Image (cartoon, rainbow, N blue to C red; front, side, top):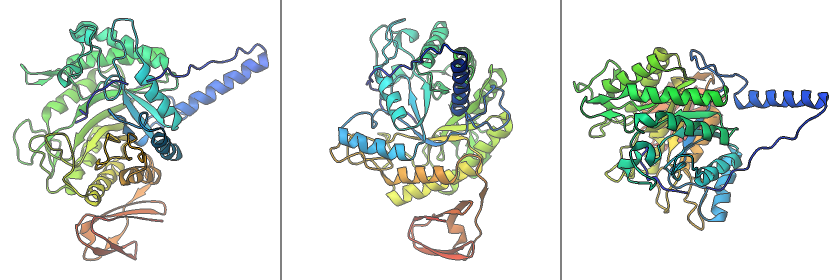
Length: 459
């Protein structure tokens, strides 16, 4: 998961300048403005890194992660089209600091290259996003390489050497200082490079040491910075499997005990955290099986989120979440678009119902016209940039069911009541037909006719 190519590409971001105020009245006004801006950036609730309670600073809701190809490049008209769509319905946007469309930020010690990252950040600003940076991956010289960047997956996914943990933390601080309006930071990605093959477990001690150094540096730069980890994959095995089985289980299977061990160690030894971040899929780690079926398997997201919140007391983010198994090329093209949307909508209901604070959809576009599940048509195309059904679902769901919304389960009756999933907040109702056939149900006393795998909004 999260392994779409890492390529380079960004223009210098504008630097913020403030006029010097010389009168007492002007100084007082400046102080008020700074306090207002800080409250606005953090939702009016400054994080203290202690967890235990919902903070507006981490309740980001539904967004997406930029990958190798995104709307910051391509045809000018297409880029403007996508920017207009995203500006009209702002949402959180996440970007890695190396790879996934961004060049090596520090190819040599003390020599920085922020062109690509500047361009991505500028796009996030332009589209009124809440920007998030994932602090991964590490320059080659921090992991035994030289000044030349090796873009192979094996090299990119290598963790920095322990002797360079502090260097990576320093780079994180430089990045935080460069983008003073960015408040949200995820430390590393999927424990990449931290698996101990000899011990057959995650090197959670090493990751936690790196995390603590980065956390300390980010808070030193600005105490209002919001920092989280450990971004580990909550992989699961089939029901009944004894391979690394844990007590965190359901009809969908059981989460790998090695992931539980890593998360537990991090939680016990971290210096602090404003949120906890994981990723994962509703299908199994081996064989990509869905139990009992693709719709029922989405209960995993609710079960894991509930367990994480109860166990750690931290708000929970899903950096990546997947419901459709990929083929050998990491493509997800076996389902029809209505089927794909219906399963995604059901998964989002499970996440929302369990109290998730943020969830990021992975990979918004590709280079060609064929891109099942993408958010918009490729901006590389002359007629590209237009929104696709998944973007409509993401934006409408984000507006209807933000974190903290008072959710309810609509009253669904009729002989087909078990064939639909439904969620409501206020007067808005979302109903999803989980069957590949037409059916009718009564929702809150009103008959609703649904086409195969139809998503129906009401209210």
